[in-house]
Structures are given as structure tokens and as C-alpha cells.
Image (cartoon, rainbow, N blue to C red):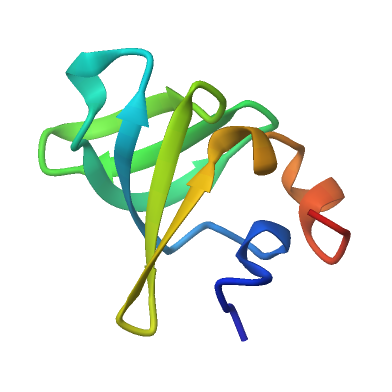
Length: 88
């Protein structure tokens, strides 16, 4: 079960997300469903199409069990299989 304490070590694909802080002010507020991820990128399905956004330099808000969890992108900037089940 994904919680605020362990979200960084879980699968992110399928979660709803929103960028709440970024070094690029144009993408703040961008939101959608995560459809894929790599070591340094998250691919989001938005109302305006698919967007590839760098994990680092952004703070990501995830909604899990009606709770909002904000993570700095540097905490999740690993290959998914390195992050899942390991320490965040």
C-alpha cells in the first residue's frame, strides 16, 4: 500500500500528479496521469496530450487515498527498478 512515508519507493505509473514547484514557471500546475517513467523523466498524459517532464528541478504532488503528498524530484530521480523496494 502506498503511503506518504513509502511513495518514493513504489511504482508511480498510474498515479495522478501535478507539478507544484519548478525551475520552469511554464509547467507549474501541469497535471495528469503518469503513463511511464525513466531514470530522469516522467511521462504524463494530460488534457493537452503526452508530456515528458524531467524529475529533478521539480516538486511533484501525488494524490494517494485523498491525501496530497509533495516530493522533490531528486528523491525519485532513479531508474524505477532501482527505486522500487529499495530505500528512497
